[in-house]
Length: 163
Image (cartoon, rainbow, N blue to C red):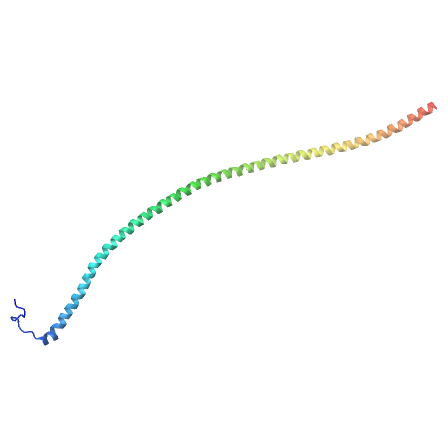
């Protein structure tokens, strides 16, 4: 084993330091940069794999959340549809009640108008009867005064006969 490398030619260090060392340093710097890039590429692959796994987990979580949201939304839609049916039934009932109330009010107005007309006719009849009764009372009063004067005359004749 030759440790000192005696068989090789002697190295001229000045020439090496002036000509070869800058080239070797440049090659080492390039090698260092390439190693950094390769190391980055290896970690990039690992990072990409980790990101894919994270993305799969996020996708699964998002799908579960979306399904839960969709289920909740479908439940809300079903509840809203049921409430709408109830409201539609109530609206239909209210419309029917409103129509019935309008018809009843119209009938009541017609009946009231007929009653007012009948009351006016009765009032006219009563006024005519009152006028007739007033005339009859006047005639009766006149007849009573005539009768009273005839009775007085008769009594005077009877008194004259008896006297």
